[in-house]
Length: 149
Image (tube, rainbow, N blue to C red):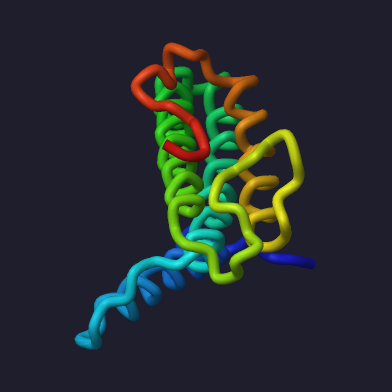
């Protein structure tokens, strides 16, 4: 017989993810000279944002029928998070590569050279398909989703 989790313990993985983000932010804020972001860092951040994007998509879909206004707000958050995710993807491609063979821009007509370019671009394209199915061009008008500017 399993018991239901307490209300304050209903989302332990989200709390753990939040703790990880807080820890990372504190680690970047140490008195040591700050280091700029690198491609590996942005790849992991993009993965986190994409996971939250998928969660918001699910929450918006399940909340909208019984609570339309709340569902619309979650759908708006879903769109804005896509815009943030897209900016992280663009920043990734603008940073210098650690290996000279990696291209600095996203080239959808061919596969990227390898990780992390391969993983971030595949993840971004997959999330982009969800956005195009559920978001109108007007919703994204103030934002372009080009890989490199």
